Length: 213
Image (cartoon, rainbow, N blue to C red; front, side):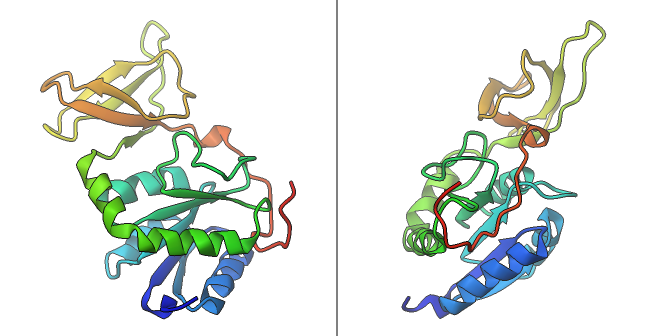
């Protein structure tokens, strides 16, 4: 792969073996690679250096990849991201509710596919950044419990007026971006209710030479 040494990749995964495998794969392809063990670690690193691409696992302690990628889209919309997980059977598209530009299914695709995805994201990064800036990033919302009537609710903070307001929800396990007008200024607020606990990821060697389950 040509000119990859000019590009920096940040790999975020709580499993040391996966971080090492990914870092080795990308280093061998000529990229400059740094790693982080979870979302908070990655955000700390982003204070001092901005990578060209972020590759992040979804199931991690402290800060899940779901929440981390939502923060990245809001604070660093110019960085393209690849979500990685073994919890989904198909890697042909980004799963609903995952704020990423691409998806790589652990243990189901050849590692060369990941390299092709990274190269494509770098090639189209300018256009993607423009699209990300045009549309407000969804907010990742924790489950807040139930009100006095037993109805589940969440608390949203408007990204425009910064006021917070409660919102009753019929379902808390919806794995997709939702939208509601702000109670105060009517600005559309896009949000995702935390569903990470309902997504479990089996252990896989991400660089395994297989495309099967």
